[in-house]
Amino acid sequence: MEWWRSAVIYQVYPRSFADSNGDGVGDLPGITGRLSYLADLGVDAVWLSPFYRSPMVDGGYDVADYCAVDPIFGTLRDFDDLLAEAHRIGLRVIVDIVPNHSSDLHPWFQQGLRDRYIFAEGRGDGPPNDWQSLFGGPAWTRVADGHWYLHLFDPGQPDLNWRNPQVGKEFDAILRFWLDRGVDGFRVDVAHGMVKAEGLPDVAGQAVLPYFDQEEVHEIYRGWRRILDSYPGQRMAVAEVFDSTPERVARYVAGDELHQAFNFDFLEAPWEPATLRRVIDASIEAAGLVGAPATWVLSNHDRQRHVTRFGDGVVGLRRARAAALLMLGLPGSAYIYQGEELGLSEVLDLPDELRLDPQRIRSGGKLTGRDGCRVPLPWERDTPPFGFGPSERAWLPMPREWAASTVEAQRDDPDSMLNLYRRALSLRRPAHRLAWRPAPEGVLCFETEQLVVAANLSGSAVPLPGPPILASSPVDELLPPDTTVWLPRDTTG
Image (tube, rainbow, N blue to C red; front, side):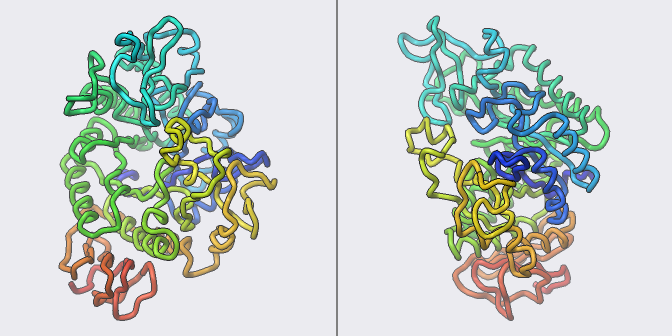
């Protein structure tokens, strides 16, 4: 069976994982030095968010050179060392690819190669259409000669023109550059956004957003799949596709396109049993129709951490523990965002002057931004920055109360969140099917080939189906609220 069908993949946000040189910013050598922690955790692969040369307007998702490492993260040699060490200890490595847009400091934009971007004439004194940036404000910026260029995100991220064959040829070469170095796959940023509707029509009156999920994008991925399949070792790609139904998302993972797509419906689902069951059923059904595995994810670098989404404090942490066992018990592949295995919550009180996220800046503060889930990881010691690097610097401040959440503090505590993840990953086995079992109201109970999973999302304790092999919170003969247990398959229903 292909490794990616049941893999657990750990997302590393490089500037916030580990700092090797004391400048307060995480880097590639810092990641390399902590890879043994990930191997010990029990994950199968590491996904690295962008580390390419960039002015860092959007945390590296504004790429100026797709085949170079930004100096704040290190060098290509550092990347090669990271890849070699990961492979030596049995971890695969997936890297981000950002094909929807580049930085405005990319040589193409700097050289005025407008046919490789989306430029258009305005309507009167205004922009070409009514499209809005996902970061707030119009999605168009006017240049000196009166024309406008498209940026679905920040003005420093002009959208590429995928109707120009030169763009496709360039990205084919970029994929091969990293595959030749030995990467095991790619996470495709804004995978549904690369092709825009002919004529750039207004959003108003359109059934499908004219800048997302256009039919022509699938031919791009058929070409990428041929490239991936031409390399040994089961290279793969996972698509970031949002604002789409499960059925539309499944088209990106048809047999001749990409391998996986992120499950944003699951990530965004509230802690509510009927909604979660509906999302689980729809996800498995849609993926199964095209022979792809379902994927499961609770947090990432763009979303508020789920401890906070589920209620924060004691309640949020208890639900996050239960959600972890629910997610890791489902058939398919799971993604873990750095720090969720430590039970980290969103940092909500960052000083405004330290926030860097253009989403917050462009929205005039109406959007809270994503800095709060990108605060560096706490590794050890009792005071910030908790061993993040060799100095007392970190690019974002860490809460003092994280002293109880460091890797060091949790490592030898059998009841810690870290050890819950470790035990779950050591017990987890590939599963391909799910069957629901009868359960009390508010309880989700299902079986796979490997386990019976029971999650109590109600407000009352219910009878426990049998003796558990793993529980998110202490249990006796009853299954308490906000608790998930794993039981052996022979448990009676």
